[in-house]
Amino acid sequence: MSVVTAAAGRGSYRFRRLARAHPVLCHVAVRVALGIVTLWLVSVVIFAATQVLPGNAAYAVLGRSVTPQRLHAVERLLNLNRPLVSQYGSWIGGVLHGNFGTSLANGESVSALIGSRIVNSAVLVVAAGVIGTLIAGVLGMLAAARRDSSFDHGASVIALGIAALPEFAVAIALVILFSVLVLHVLPAVSAIPAGTEPWQNINELILPVATLAIVIAPYIFRIVRGAMIEALESDYVEMAQLKGLSRRRVLLLHAFPNALPPVVQVIGLNLLYLAGGIVVVEYVFDYPGMGAALVDAVSNRDIPVIQFTVLVLTAFYVFVNITTDIISLLASPRRRVAG
Amino acid sequence: MSARWEWLALLGRAARTQRGAVGLALAGSVVLLAIIGPFVAPHSPTLSVTGTFVPPAPGYPLGGDTIGRDVLSRVLAGGWLLLAVAAGATVLGVGAGVVVGISAAYLGRVSDGLLMRIVDVLLAFPPLVFALLLLSVLGSHVWLILIAVAVSHAPQVARVVRATALEVCERDFVRAAELLAMPKRRVMAGEVLPNLISVVMVELGLRFTYSILIIAGLSFLSFGIQPPAANWGLMINENRIGLAANPWGVVAPIILIAILTIGLNTFTDAIARTSLGVERPTEQFELAAAGIAAGATP
Image (cartoon, rainbow over all chains, first blue to last red; front, side, top):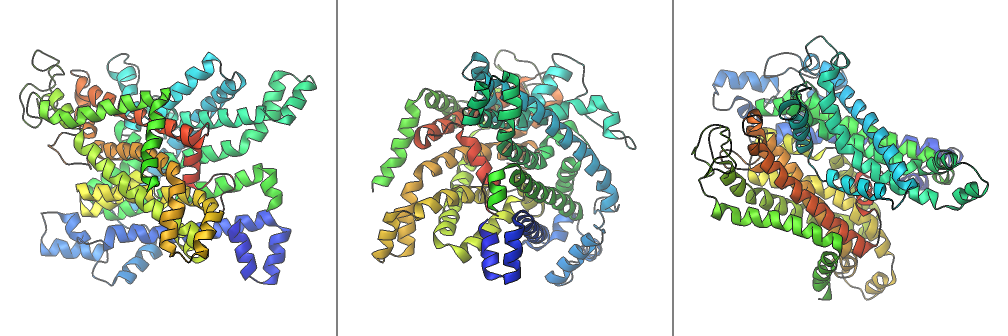
């Protein structure tokens, strides 16, 4: 909250009064403003990495097959012949007006190319997020309720093991188990036919969703377990137990709500992880989403597509970060009142 | 002077715990294999010496890969560069993060705000995506991978270090050093840093694991260390199509990476438990690194 107070200290009297009257509202406003500034700077970094770094972007795109005519064509497409500020201006201006440029690989507009892929990736992230959180959350609560039982120890060791595994290892282990060597029940490649939505192809979704859910589960498990243990050791839980309330009632209605803030944070953290995790998993399963698009674009040096996909992924990151922060603020009364 | 030995003492204490010993043994055996591997490989890791995806046979205990190279030789030769780049990126990234974190905490106000805004911006990039962004135009180079991974670590380390350093900077011995008119740089290096050793050690362990995962991931996406040189991440991807014929080309590197990262994670956990005395250390660090820990100020 230091920025709020600092800003209030420097700001006008009216702002200070507003901050005192509506601490939550003020916090939200500051977070959103900072988020917008962050996103703007992120766009500068993306632009710098793709169009300013030494090594002319046009040469990078064309590789060895460079002719003066094609070089000129690409330079005009990327505005490379104009000053840097003007290059950046026309790119970011286009983005703000919903014009994301044209793919260098096939001449299609980036929005047509990426539009459906955003939906596909979103389905993957939401499904993996919900399933991973639910399973890990329930297991974490059970482990906390039976602390130091063999179930607790077993689950904790497995969580530590899985947490260290790279996502491609999990993905390929699942492919080996379910589509190639042991069983042959699920497709190893998740091509979603054009024109159909991902949820119409459940079989294709199972392995990529399972991979991501397995990868995020250990973190959620460990946080839920830790937060629940802390809550179960508190005075109010002891009080509830002494009142003779049922074990389940104590667990769900008394302990769990107090374990929520850290849980909200770890869910946010895992959504943030998923923004990067989809890259490898979509590539493994050839799933037509943002991550696979980014990998394709990088191997084709398709700069407009790279810029747009990275911008979307980072915007998602900033958005989740702000949302998590606000929700966990609202979920913890102490911080809510303290402003 | 004593700070120099504190690092080793910390590692020793962690290694003597049950958890630490197991982790060190797992990770150490894979590191050893990667280092001596290239010298004991029975065949050339880059020449075709057997058939495409032939199953294990005498002389070729793990069979052949996608173009008939010996899988065992490629496994033995394919680890050291991955580990070397990961170690370099970790040291560089954690070093930069420590400098930024302590500076932000100690110098305060303007520097703090400025440095933390930069950290926020870099944090918005998922590490793998950031590496892909850098490699997209400059092409794939070992030094660039090292820098990309280091840059994606630095902001996370900076956040964690800053959070701990803020408390240290309030202590009396720091005030005392200031009253003696000690230069700021010496206060930061000589008074603040030695009190952050356990935090930095835990960060080194965590970040080394992540470096391995990111670099192996990049190689898996075929943007890493370039073929035909053997490399565990690349091998997994190359030999995926032959899973049914000879799974070893995929399974062997996966097992090695898994043993290595599980071992490192376990050992890091042991360091955190012995030196910081926390029960679920790694998550606290990761939450702090993501900037959404409870009470994290914007």
